[in-house]
Amino acid sequence: MFESLKSITEIPDLRKRILFTLLMLAVYRLGSFIPTPGINADVFEQAFAQLAGSLFGLLAMFSGGSLRRLTVFALGIMPYITASIILQLLTVVSPHLEKLKKEGELGRRKITEYTRWMTVGLSAFQAFGIAIALEKQTAVGVPLVNHPGPGFVFSTVLTLTTGSVFIMWLGEQITSRGIGNGMSLLIFAGIVVGLPRAAADLYEKVFVTRVWSFPILLLLLAFMLAIVAFIVLVERGERRIPIQYAKRVVGRRIMGGVSTHLPLKVNSGGVMPIIFAVSILTFPQTLGLFRLDQSSFAISRYFGMGLAWFSKVFAYGEPLYTLTYVLMIIFFAHFYLSIVYNPDEVADNVRKQGGFMPGIRPGKRTADYLDDVLTKITWVGGIYLALVALIPEIMLAGLRVNHLPTWLGGAWFDANFPGWLLHGMNVNFYFGGTSLLIVVGVAMDTVQQVEAQLIMRHYEGFLKKGRVRGRRAS
Image 1 (cartoon, rainbow, N blue to C red):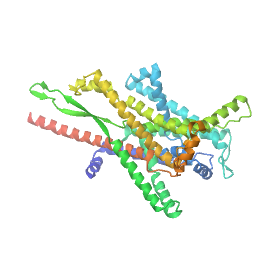
Image 2 (image 1 turned 180 degrees about the vertical axis):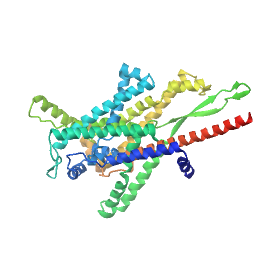
Image 3 (image 1 turned 90 degrees about the horizontal axis):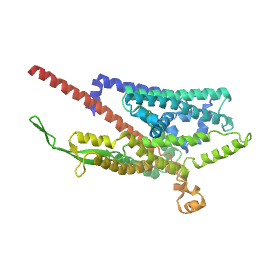
Image 4 (image 1 turned 90 degrees about the vertical axis):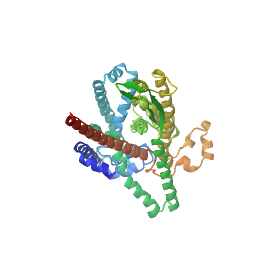
Protein backbone atom coordinates (compact mmCIF):
# COMPACT_ATOMS: atom_id res chain seq x y z
CA MET A 1 0.00 0.00 0.00
CA PHE A 2 2.74 2.47 0.98
CA GLU A 3 4.74 1.53 -2.13
CA SER A 4 1.68 2.29 -4.29
CA LEU A 5 1.20 5.66 -2.62
CA LYS A 6 4.87 6.43 -3.14
CA SER A 7 4.59 5.47 -6.81
CA ILE A 8 1.63 7.81 -7.21
CA THR A 9 3.66 10.76 -5.97
CA GLU A 10 6.59 9.83 -8.23
CA ILE A 11 4.59 9.77 -11.49
CA PRO A 12 3.90 13.37 -12.58
CA ASP A 13 0.94 12.62 -14.86
CA LEU A 14 -0.84 10.43 -12.31
CA ARG A 15 -0.16 12.94 -9.55
CA LYS A 16 -1.65 15.73 -11.66
CA ARG A 17 -4.75 13.63 -12.41
CA ILE A 18 -5.38 12.88 -8.75
CA LEU A 19 -4.82 16.50 -7.68
CA PHE A 20 -7.16 17.69 -10.46
CA THR A 21 -9.84 15.23 -9.29
CA LEU A 22 -9.53 16.43 -5.70
CA LEU A 23 -9.71 20.06 -6.84
CA MET A 24 -12.91 19.44 -8.82
CA LEU A 25 -14.47 17.63 -5.85
CA ALA A 26 -13.54 20.59 -3.64
CA VAL A 27 -15.28 22.96 -6.08
CA TYR A 28 -18.33 20.68 -6.00
CA ARG A 29 -18.43 20.79 -2.21
CA LEU A 30 -17.96 24.56 -2.21
CA GLY A 31 -21.00 25.01 -4.45
CA SER A 32 -23.03 22.87 -2.05
CA PHE A 33 -23.00 25.76 0.45
CA ILE A 34 -24.08 28.61 -1.88
CA PRO A 35 -27.82 29.16 -1.22
CA THR A 36 -30.41 29.83 -3.88
CA PRO A 37 -31.50 33.51 -3.82
CA GLY A 38 -34.86 34.40 -2.29
CA ILE A 39 -35.15 31.37 0.04
CA ASN A 40 -35.50 31.54 3.80
CA ALA A 41 -32.84 28.90 4.43
CA ASP A 42 -33.63 28.20 8.11
CA VAL A 43 -37.35 27.78 7.49
CA PHE A 44 -36.70 25.63 4.42
CA GLU A 45 -34.47 23.25 6.39
CA GLN A 46 -37.24 22.84 8.99
CA ALA A 47 -39.74 22.08 6.23
CA PHE A 48 -37.39 19.63 4.55
CA ALA A 49 -36.95 17.72 7.80
CA GLN A 50 -40.56 16.54 7.33
CA LEU A 51 -39.56 14.95 4.00
CA ALA A 52 -36.73 12.85 5.47
CA GLY A 53 -38.79 9.70 5.00
CA SER A 54 -39.54 10.34 1.33
CA LEU A 55 -37.71 10.05 -1.97
CA PHE A 56 -36.42 13.60 -1.44
CA GLY A 57 -34.46 12.30 1.54
CA LEU A 58 -32.71 9.80 -0.73
CA LEU A 59 -32.05 12.49 -3.35
CA ALA A 60 -30.63 14.75 -0.63
CA MET A 61 -28.16 11.98 0.20
CA PHE A 62 -27.10 11.73 -3.46
CA SER A 63 -26.66 15.53 -3.69
CA GLY A 64 -24.52 15.71 -0.55
CA GLY A 65 -27.13 17.72 1.35
CA SER A 66 -27.47 20.38 -1.37
CA LEU A 67 -31.16 19.64 -1.79
CA ARG A 68 -31.71 19.89 1.97
CA ARG A 69 -30.26 23.43 1.96
CA LEU A 70 -31.55 24.21 -1.57
CA THR A 71 -28.19 25.43 -2.79
CA VAL A 72 -27.26 26.15 -6.40
CA PHE A 73 -26.34 22.43 -6.76
CA ALA A 74 -29.67 21.21 -5.36
CA LEU A 75 -30.63 19.24 -8.51
CA GLY A 76 -27.34 17.37 -8.44
CA ILE A 77 -26.35 15.01 -11.22
CA MET A 78 -29.76 13.33 -11.57
CA PRO A 79 -30.96 15.38 -14.61
CA TYR A 80 -27.85 14.35 -16.54
CA ILE A 81 -28.31 10.67 -15.63
CA THR A 82 -31.98 10.82 -16.61
CA ALA A 83 -31.09 12.40 -19.96
CA SER A 84 -28.47 9.69 -20.56
CA ILE A 85 -31.05 6.96 -19.88
CA ILE A 86 -33.59 8.54 -22.23
CA LEU A 87 -31.01 8.86 -25.03
CA GLN A 88 -29.92 5.23 -24.55
CA LEU A 89 -33.53 4.04 -24.73
CA LEU A 90 -34.22 6.18 -27.80
CA THR A 91 -31.19 4.67 -29.50
CA VAL A 92 -33.10 1.37 -29.71
CA VAL A 93 -36.15 2.89 -31.47
CA SER A 94 -34.63 5.83 -33.37
CA PRO A 95 -32.79 4.98 -36.63
CA HIS A 96 -30.96 8.34 -36.52
CA LEU A 97 -29.54 7.74 -33.03
CA GLU A 98 -28.72 4.12 -33.87
CA LYS A 99 -26.78 5.32 -36.91
CA LEU A 100 -24.90 7.86 -34.79
CA LYS A 101 -24.01 5.16 -32.28
CA LYS A 102 -22.38 3.09 -35.03
CA GLU A 103 -20.33 6.03 -36.38
CA GLY A 104 -17.72 5.74 -33.63
CA GLU A 105 -16.20 8.75 -31.93
CA LEU A 106 -18.00 11.35 -34.09
CA GLY A 107 -21.39 9.81 -33.41
CA ARG A 108 -20.64 9.49 -29.70
CA ARG A 109 -19.85 13.20 -29.51
CA LYS A 110 -23.15 14.04 -31.20
CA ILE A 111 -25.11 11.86 -28.76
CA THR A 112 -23.23 13.53 -25.89
CA GLU A 113 -24.30 16.92 -27.26
CA TYR A 114 -27.94 15.78 -27.37
CA THR A 115 -27.58 14.53 -23.78
CA ARG A 116 -26.30 17.90 -22.62
CA TRP A 117 -29.18 19.80 -24.20
CA MET A 118 -31.70 17.36 -22.74
CA THR A 119 -30.06 17.84 -19.35
CA VAL A 120 -30.70 21.58 -19.63
CA GLY A 121 -34.37 20.97 -20.45
CA LEU A 122 -34.92 18.46 -17.63
CA SER A 123 -33.13 20.71 -15.13
CA ALA A 124 -35.28 23.68 -16.11
CA PHE A 125 -38.44 21.56 -15.79
CA GLN A 126 -37.53 20.29 -12.32
CA ALA A 127 -36.38 23.74 -11.20
CA PHE A 128 -39.68 25.26 -12.34
CA GLY A 129 -41.61 22.65 -10.37
CA ILE A 130 -39.54 23.35 -7.26
CA ALA A 131 -40.03 27.12 -7.62
CA ILE A 132 -43.83 26.79 -8.00
CA ALA A 133 -44.02 24.47 -4.97
CA LEU A 134 -41.84 26.71 -2.79
CA GLU A 135 -44.06 29.72 -3.36
CA LYS A 136 -47.03 27.85 -1.86
CA GLN A 137 -45.24 26.25 1.10
CA THR A 138 -44.95 27.48 4.66
CA ALA A 139 -43.25 26.14 7.78
CA VAL A 140 -44.34 27.09 11.30
CA GLY A 141 -46.51 29.76 9.68
CA VAL A 142 -43.61 31.42 7.88
CA PRO A 143 -43.43 31.35 4.05
CA LEU A 144 -40.37 29.71 2.51
CA VAL A 145 -40.01 32.42 -0.14
CA ASN A 146 -39.29 35.99 0.90
CA HIS A 147 -40.65 37.66 -2.25
CA PRO A 148 -42.73 35.29 -4.41
CA GLY A 149 -43.57 36.13 -7.98
CA PRO A 150 -42.29 35.74 -11.57
CA GLY A 151 -38.92 37.19 -10.59
CA PHE A 152 -38.36 34.50 -7.98
CA VAL A 153 -39.45 31.73 -10.38
CA PHE A 154 -37.12 32.99 -13.11
CA SER A 155 -34.12 33.38 -10.80
CA THR A 156 -34.69 29.94 -9.24
CA VAL A 157 -34.96 28.22 -12.62
CA LEU A 158 -31.87 30.02 -13.88
CA THR A 159 -29.84 29.30 -10.73
CA LEU A 160 -30.72 25.60 -10.36
CA THR A 161 -30.37 24.89 -14.08
CA THR A 162 -26.97 26.58 -14.21
CA GLY A 163 -25.86 24.62 -11.16
CA SER A 164 -26.93 21.32 -12.72
CA VAL A 165 -25.12 22.11 -15.98
CA PHE A 166 -21.98 23.11 -14.04
CA ILE A 167 -22.06 19.79 -12.16
CA MET A 168 -22.35 17.99 -15.50
CA TRP A 169 -19.26 19.89 -16.69
CA LEU A 170 -17.37 18.98 -13.49
CA GLY A 171 -18.15 15.29 -13.98
CA GLU A 172 -17.00 15.34 -17.59
CA GLN A 173 -13.78 17.11 -16.64
CA ILE A 174 -13.01 14.53 -13.94
CA THR A 175 -13.64 11.68 -16.38
CA SER A 176 -11.41 13.12 -19.10
CA ARG A 177 -8.64 14.78 -17.07
CA GLY A 178 -8.84 13.09 -13.67
CA ILE A 179 -9.13 9.59 -12.22
CA GLY A 180 -12.31 7.52 -12.19
CA ASN A 181 -15.83 8.10 -13.47
CA GLY A 182 -16.66 11.73 -12.79
CA MET A 183 -20.41 11.32 -12.30
CA SER A 184 -19.97 8.41 -9.89
CA LEU A 185 -17.30 10.27 -7.92
CA LEU A 186 -19.59 13.27 -7.46
CA ILE A 187 -22.30 11.02 -6.01
CA PHE A 188 -19.64 9.28 -3.91
CA ALA A 189 -18.48 12.61 -2.49
CA GLY A 190 -22.04 13.63 -1.69
CA ILE A 191 -22.60 10.45 0.34
CA VAL A 192 -19.27 10.35 2.16
CA VAL A 193 -19.60 13.88 3.56
CA GLY A 194 -22.80 12.80 5.32
CA LEU A 195 -21.28 9.85 7.16
CA PRO A 196 -19.95 11.88 10.13
CA ARG A 197 -23.39 13.45 10.58
CA ALA A 198 -25.01 9.99 10.50
CA ALA A 199 -22.55 8.70 13.12
CA ALA A 200 -23.31 11.71 15.32
CA ASP A 201 -27.03 11.04 14.91
CA LEU A 202 -26.57 7.46 16.11
CA TYR A 203 -24.55 8.64 19.11
CA GLU A 204 -27.22 11.18 20.04
CA LYS A 205 -30.06 8.66 19.85
CA VAL A 206 -28.25 6.18 22.10
CA PHE A 207 -26.32 8.28 24.61
CA VAL A 208 -28.07 11.68 24.66
CA THR A 209 -31.80 11.35 23.98
CA ARG A 210 -31.72 7.60 24.75
CA VAL A 211 -34.33 6.82 22.12
CA TRP A 212 -32.52 3.50 21.55
CA SER A 213 -30.88 1.26 24.07
CA PHE A 214 -27.28 0.13 23.80
CA PRO A 215 -28.23 -3.50 22.83
CA ILE A 216 -30.28 -2.12 19.92
CA LEU A 217 -27.22 -0.16 18.78
CA LEU A 218 -25.10 -3.33 18.90
CA LEU A 219 -27.76 -5.22 16.95
CA LEU A 220 -27.89 -2.46 14.35
CA LEU A 221 -24.08 -2.42 14.02
CA ALA A 222 -24.02 -6.21 13.62
CA PHE A 223 -26.66 -5.92 10.90
CA MET A 224 -24.58 -3.24 9.17
CA LEU A 225 -21.49 -5.47 9.22
CA ALA A 226 -23.54 -8.34 7.78
CA ILE A 227 -24.71 -6.07 4.95
CA VAL A 228 -21.13 -4.98 4.30
CA ALA A 229 -19.98 -8.61 4.12
CA PHE A 230 -22.88 -9.50 1.82
CA ILE A 231 -22.14 -6.59 -0.55
CA VAL A 232 -18.42 -7.36 -0.71
CA LEU A 233 -19.14 -11.07 -1.30
CA VAL A 234 -21.48 -10.42 -4.23
CA GLU A 235 -19.40 -7.58 -5.70
CA ARG A 236 -16.37 -9.88 -5.86
CA GLY A 237 -18.43 -12.81 -7.14
CA GLU A 238 -17.91 -13.90 -10.73
CA ARG A 239 -18.65 -16.78 -13.08
CA ARG A 240 -15.48 -18.09 -14.71
CA ILE A 241 -15.90 -19.49 -18.22
CA PRO A 242 -12.99 -21.84 -19.13
CA ILE A 243 -11.15 -21.05 -22.37
CA GLN A 244 -8.61 -23.32 -24.07
CA TYR A 245 -6.07 -21.96 -26.57
CA ALA A 246 -4.83 -24.41 -29.18
CA LYS A 247 -1.13 -24.86 -29.85
CA ARG A 248 0.28 -23.20 -32.94
CA VAL A 249 3.76 -22.89 -34.43
CA VAL A 250 5.05 -19.40 -35.18
CA GLY A 251 8.53 -19.68 -36.70
CA ARG A 252 10.50 -21.86 -34.33
CA ARG A 253 8.31 -21.13 -31.34
CA ILE A 254 5.25 -23.03 -30.14
CA MET A 255 2.57 -20.67 -28.86
CA GLY A 256 -0.74 -21.35 -27.14
CA GLY A 257 -1.75 -24.60 -25.53
CA VAL A 258 -2.72 -22.89 -22.29
CA SER A 259 -5.97 -22.88 -20.32
CA THR A 260 -7.46 -19.71 -18.86
CA HIS A 261 -10.87 -18.36 -17.99
CA LEU A 262 -13.18 -15.48 -18.90
CA PRO A 263 -14.51 -13.78 -15.72
CA LEU A 264 -18.14 -12.64 -15.80
CA LYS A 265 -19.14 -10.56 -12.78
CA VAL A 266 -22.42 -11.27 -11.03
CA ASN A 267 -23.10 -7.54 -10.77
CA SER A 268 -21.66 -6.15 -13.99
CA GLY A 269 -23.60 -2.88 -13.80
CA GLY A 270 -22.41 -1.91 -10.34
CA VAL A 271 -24.63 0.72 -8.76
CA MET A 272 -25.74 2.29 -12.05
CA PRO A 273 -29.09 0.37 -12.24
CA ILE A 274 -30.11 1.81 -8.85
CA ILE A 275 -29.09 5.33 -9.88
CA PHE A 276 -31.00 4.95 -13.16
CA ALA A 277 -34.14 3.77 -11.32
CA VAL A 278 -33.99 6.60 -8.77
CA SER A 279 -33.51 9.23 -11.47
CA ILE A 280 -36.57 7.97 -13.38
CA LEU A 281 -38.72 7.80 -10.24
CA THR A 282 -38.04 11.47 -9.50
CA PHE A 283 -40.50 12.42 -12.26
CA PRO A 284 -43.70 11.52 -10.34
CA GLN A 285 -42.35 13.42 -7.34
CA THR A 286 -41.54 16.42 -9.56
CA LEU A 287 -45.02 16.34 -11.09
CA GLY A 288 -46.44 16.33 -7.58
CA LEU A 289 -44.76 19.68 -6.95
CA PHE A 290 -47.13 21.34 -9.44
CA ARG A 291 -50.23 22.30 -7.46
CA LEU A 292 -52.56 23.65 -10.10
CA ASP A 293 -55.48 25.94 -9.41
CA GLN A 294 -58.47 23.67 -10.00
CA SER A 295 -61.12 26.41 -10.03
CA SER A 296 -60.31 27.90 -13.43
CA PHE A 297 -61.17 25.18 -15.94
CA ALA A 298 -62.71 21.75 -15.70
CA ILE A 299 -59.73 20.23 -17.50
CA SER A 300 -57.44 21.71 -14.85
CA ARG A 301 -59.61 20.20 -12.13
CA TYR A 302 -59.53 16.70 -13.64
CA PHE A 303 -55.84 16.98 -14.45
CA GLY A 304 -55.11 18.10 -10.90
CA MET A 305 -57.13 15.19 -9.47
CA GLY A 306 -55.28 12.72 -11.67
CA LEU A 307 -51.96 14.28 -10.78
CA ALA A 308 -52.77 14.08 -7.07
CA TRP A 309 -53.75 10.40 -7.39
CA PHE A 310 -50.63 9.63 -9.40
CA SER A 311 -48.38 11.33 -6.85
CA LYS A 312 -50.13 9.54 -3.99
CA VAL A 313 -49.78 5.98 -5.33
CA PHE A 314 -46.17 6.64 -6.36
CA ALA A 315 -45.23 8.21 -3.02
CA TYR A 316 -42.01 6.98 -1.43
CA GLY A 317 -42.56 3.66 0.35
CA GLU A 318 -45.97 2.92 -1.18
CA PRO A 319 -46.43 -0.62 -2.62
CA LEU A 320 -46.71 0.53 -6.25
CA TYR A 321 -43.58 2.67 -5.87
CA THR A 322 -41.66 -0.22 -4.27
CA LEU A 323 -42.76 -2.70 -6.95
CA THR A 324 -41.84 -0.26 -9.74
CA TYR A 325 -38.52 0.44 -8.05
CA VAL A 326 -37.62 -3.25 -7.90
CA LEU A 327 -38.70 -3.96 -11.49
CA MET A 328 -36.79 -0.94 -12.81
CA ILE A 329 -33.61 -1.99 -11.00
CA ILE A 330 -33.79 -5.47 -12.53
CA PHE A 331 -34.60 -4.01 -15.96
CA PHE A 332 -31.73 -1.52 -15.88
CA ALA A 333 -29.34 -4.25 -14.69
CA HIS A 334 -30.03 -6.09 -17.97
CA PHE A 335 -30.19 -2.87 -19.99
CA TYR A 336 -26.85 -1.55 -18.73
CA LEU A 337 -25.21 -4.93 -19.38
CA SER A 338 -26.46 -4.89 -22.99
CA ILE A 339 -24.75 -1.50 -23.43
CA VAL A 340 -21.36 -2.30 -21.92
CA TYR A 341 -20.97 -5.96 -22.92
CA ASN A 342 -21.24 -7.42 -26.43
CA PRO A 343 -21.16 -11.27 -26.45
CA ASP A 344 -20.69 -11.39 -30.25
CA GLU A 345 -17.59 -9.20 -30.05
CA VAL A 346 -16.12 -11.22 -27.16
CA ALA A 347 -16.74 -14.52 -28.98
CA ASP A 348 -15.15 -13.14 -32.15
CA ASN A 349 -12.05 -11.97 -30.24
CA VAL A 350 -11.65 -15.38 -28.59
CA ARG A 351 -11.92 -17.10 -31.99
CA LYS A 352 -9.38 -14.76 -33.61
CA GLN A 353 -6.86 -15.55 -30.86
CA GLY A 354 -7.25 -19.27 -31.47
CA GLY A 355 -9.27 -19.95 -28.32
CA PHE A 356 -12.43 -21.95 -27.71
CA MET A 357 -14.68 -22.98 -24.85
CA PRO A 358 -14.63 -26.73 -24.23
CA GLY A 359 -17.76 -28.38 -25.64
CA ILE A 360 -18.94 -25.23 -27.48
CA ARG A 361 -18.32 -24.35 -31.09
CA PRO A 362 -16.52 -21.07 -31.77
CA GLY A 363 -18.46 -18.18 -33.28
CA LYS A 364 -22.23 -17.92 -32.99
CA ARG A 365 -22.60 -20.83 -30.53
CA THR A 366 -20.06 -19.24 -28.20
CA ALA A 367 -21.83 -15.86 -28.37
CA ASP A 368 -25.19 -17.49 -27.60
CA TYR A 369 -23.67 -19.38 -24.68
CA LEU A 370 -22.14 -16.20 -23.23
CA ASP A 371 -25.41 -14.34 -23.68
CA ASP A 372 -27.31 -17.12 -21.86
CA VAL A 373 -24.84 -17.19 -18.96
CA LEU A 374 -24.84 -13.39 -18.67
CA THR A 375 -28.65 -13.28 -18.63
CA LYS A 376 -28.85 -15.83 -15.81
CA ILE A 377 -26.23 -14.24 -13.57
CA THR A 378 -27.65 -10.75 -14.27
CA TRP A 379 -30.99 -11.92 -12.89
CA VAL A 380 -29.15 -12.81 -9.70
CA GLY A 381 -27.30 -9.49 -9.74
CA GLY A 382 -30.52 -7.52 -10.34
CA ILE A 383 -32.33 -9.22 -7.45
CA TYR A 384 -29.30 -8.59 -5.23
CA LEU A 385 -29.34 -4.88 -6.14
CA ALA A 386 -33.09 -4.69 -5.45
CA LEU A 387 -32.64 -6.27 -2.00
CA VAL A 388 -29.80 -3.91 -1.13
CA ALA A 389 -31.80 -0.90 -2.32
CA LEU A 390 -34.87 -1.91 -0.29
CA ILE A 391 -32.99 -2.24 3.02
CA PRO A 392 -32.90 1.51 3.85
CA GLU A 393 -36.48 1.92 2.63
CA ILE A 394 -37.76 -0.87 4.92
CA MET A 395 -35.77 0.46 7.87
CA LEU A 396 -37.06 4.00 7.34
CA ALA A 397 -40.59 3.77 5.90
CA GLY A 398 -41.54 0.07 5.84
CA LEU A 399 -43.18 -1.86 3.02
CA ARG A 400 -46.68 -0.37 3.60
CA VAL A 401 -48.42 -3.32 1.93
CA ASN A 402 -51.31 -2.67 4.32
CA HIS A 403 -52.14 0.33 2.08
CA LEU A 404 -53.21 -2.05 -0.67
CA PRO A 405 -56.94 -2.36 -1.42
CA THR A 406 -58.90 -5.00 0.49
CA TRP A 407 -59.23 -7.24 -2.58
CA LEU A 408 -55.42 -7.31 -2.82
CA GLY A 409 -55.02 -8.32 0.82
CA GLY A 410 -54.35 -4.95 2.44
CA ALA A 411 -56.42 -5.77 5.53
CA TRP A 412 -54.80 -9.21 5.82
CA PHE A 413 -51.31 -7.70 5.72
CA ASP A 414 -52.34 -5.18 8.38
CA ALA A 415 -53.57 -7.94 10.70
CA ASN A 416 -50.76 -10.46 10.23
CA PHE A 417 -47.57 -8.50 9.53
CA PRO A 418 -45.51 -6.85 12.31
CA GLY A 419 -45.78 -3.08 12.61
CA TRP A 420 -42.04 -2.43 12.12
CA LEU A 421 -42.19 -4.15 8.72
CA LEU A 422 -45.28 -2.24 7.60
CA HIS A 423 -44.46 1.21 8.94
CA GLY A 424 -40.68 1.07 9.30
CA MET A 425 -38.57 1.87 12.34
CA ASN A 426 -37.78 5.49 11.44
CA VAL A 427 -34.12 4.51 11.18
CA ASN A 428 -32.07 6.34 8.57
CA PHE A 429 -29.91 3.37 7.52
CA TYR A 430 -27.08 5.54 6.28
CA PHE A 431 -24.33 2.96 6.60
CA GLY A 432 -25.94 0.29 4.45
CA GLY A 433 -28.07 -0.31 1.42
CA THR A 434 -27.70 2.01 -1.55
CA SER A 435 -25.24 4.42 0.05
CA LEU A 436 -22.81 1.68 1.09
CA LEU A 437 -23.09 0.00 -2.32
CA ILE A 438 -22.21 3.27 -4.06
CA VAL A 439 -19.31 4.00 -1.71
CA VAL A 440 -17.83 0.48 -2.04
CA GLY A 441 -18.41 0.25 -5.80
CA VAL A 442 -16.98 3.67 -6.68
CA ALA A 443 -14.02 3.22 -4.33
CA MET A 444 -13.15 -0.17 -5.85
CA ASP A 445 -13.49 1.17 -9.41
CA THR A 446 -11.30 4.21 -8.67
CA VAL A 447 -8.61 2.09 -6.99
CA GLN A 448 -8.59 -0.26 -9.98
CA GLN A 449 -8.09 2.67 -12.35
CA VAL A 450 -5.20 3.98 -10.26
CA GLU A 451 -3.62 0.50 -10.26
CA ALA A 452 -4.08 0.29 -14.03
CA GLN A 453 -2.27 3.60 -14.42
CA LEU A 454 0.60 2.34 -12.21
CA ILE A 455 0.89 -0.94 -14.12
CA MET A 456 0.90 0.90 -17.44
CA ARG A 457 3.72 3.17 -16.27
CA HIS A 458 5.74 0.23 -14.97
CA TYR A 459 5.30 -1.74 -18.18
CA GLU A 460 6.43 1.30 -20.15
CA GLY A 461 9.57 1.52 -18.02
CA PHE A 462 10.42 -2.16 -18.57
CA LEU A 463 10.03 -1.77 -22.32
CA LYS A 464 12.36 1.24 -22.34
CA LYS A 465 15.04 -0.73 -20.54
CA GLY A 466 14.63 -3.59 -22.97
CA ARG A 467 15.03 -1.33 -25.97
CA VAL A 468 18.15 0.28 -24.53
CA ARG A 469 19.76 -3.13 -23.93
CA GLY A 470 18.85 -4.20 -27.46
CA ARG A 471 20.55 -1.18 -28.97
CA ARG A 472 23.71 -1.69 -26.93
CA ALA A 473 23.89 -5.38 -27.83
CA SER A 474 23.61 -4.57 -31.50
